[in-house]
Amino acid sequence: MTPSDAFHIVVNPGDSGQRLDVFIASRIAGLSRSRSASLILAEYIRVNGGSKKPGYRICIRDQINGIIPEPEPVAISPESMELDIIHEDRDLIVVNKPPGLVIHPAPGHRRGTLVNALLYHCPDIGPIGGELRPGIVHRLDKDTSGVLVVAKNAAAHAHLSAQFSGRTIRKTYLALVLGQMAGDTGKIELPIGRHPVDRKRMSTNSRRARAAETRWRVRDRFNGITYLELNLKTGRTHQARVHCSALQHAIVGDPVYGGCKPTKNMPKAVRDLIKTVHRQMLHAWRLECIHPSGQTPVCFEVPLPEDMADLISRLRLLDS
Figure 1: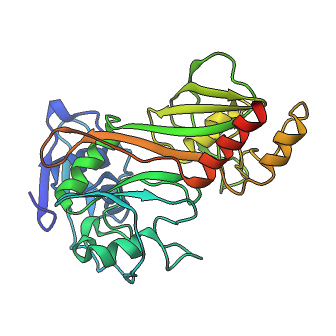
Figure 2: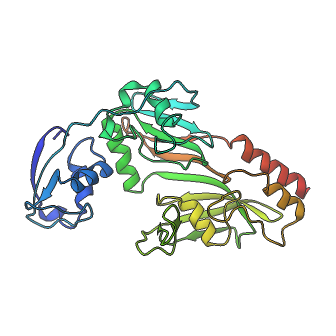
Figure 3: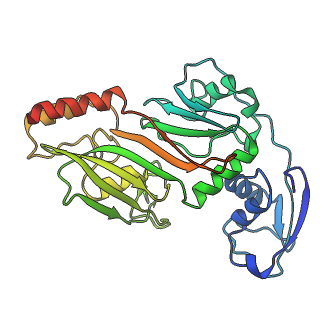
């Protein structure tokens, strides 16, 4: 089945209980779960003749009918921009994203985004997924640096999306957090959802939270700051930032979740140093996945950005 076909599916016993958007994405080549969900909401896909929500749990003998419209042209202008590409083949582009770079166009950031640069570098990436985020299967916040994997074709996009939704991709971050973590390793299992008041923030006290898990390990300790390695088992929005803040160890420099407020018992030299930080000290250090084409494990890793490496060096000097 290809995305241009109309389709009719009768749910069999083995598929009963699945989310509608996940089921449709698994049955149609090159269709991501998010694209499936948007088509369900637009009623291009109906169940038993009626509309359903993307999270509807399908039942035995449900009649699913739909049509996948051709992707609309991507209305984003390609831009010649310097990209730090650490790997590229026929299926993937792997970028070392610098802090400050927005991933895709949005109000206030119509140009100068990673997607603008990708469309210039690889023009054929445009139609993938039929969205305004061509090839993008995961994201990093504007002020988070590090590894970002981009699909160059529909098959790679579907393969990587399935790995992310199936939580088989290993994502490891490095972070500097306020205070001293108790112990050397731990696990944070707090659900995350939209903040009940501030819709631009996420919260562990949301009315509609989803399960989230972050595992952490101490890499180094400084006077008033801990250097952590974070393994995100799930991929919720702002997950690392929200989870660290929930433990009262906000990521240094995070203006949204308390990382710009040094503790009172912190040495003055460290407090002054934190005041010079202008973004959250969070870096997507390593990403491990199965390559869409060769079906072999691959690992992409990038060094710390200059500002974060410099901060660590200065903290070590203060401790010496």
